[in-house]
Length: 258
Image (spheres, rainbow, N blue to C red):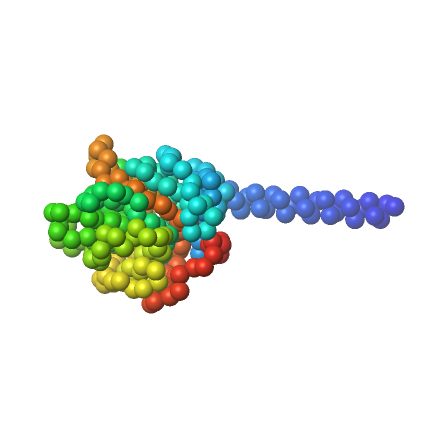
């Protein structure tokens, strides 16, 4: 009996030491802001909530109109809504991928519908005063065309803006949800729709700045909100790797954390 009791005491002490080591490790990681090496950095299923599946947190500010049936289960319907998310712990200093499903539900002929973007600034326009990345769905009489504008580490009104345009009919995204992906690999940016490469942008910085904020639904210039998006999102994901650099088959099921 004394032998078994001794073994139990040693086991309990060992478990206690293990817990102390883990607690110390977590505190050290938090103190020094250790960046995770997991591929998936953020994942929004939109299945009835705005919870990030990676951290199991619902720390997104703002709201959406409803959660209709979308690509996989429910999705998020934006009817001039906006949500914001603190992404300061997501490292954009190397390769990355932002991908999601989206359907245009607006009923106007012309608009500047900003799907979403990241910025280091309170001015939620891609790179208003610092580098940022973003995506705009532009249907405009001014431009006399309909197109997607994809921003890769750009500064507004800078002659070296790193963006690309893809012209397309404004009816293209109204029939169903389409898979959209922005990818950065090395110094090249890629834009895909339904797994088909639509454009590339070369000469990007090898190491981008970390972007502090994600915003979906509109862009804000100072205190003025403009370019609200009306559409359905599903499976919004941010990855710390370049998932695709050539044509691919879009995902056929909800994303899993990897």
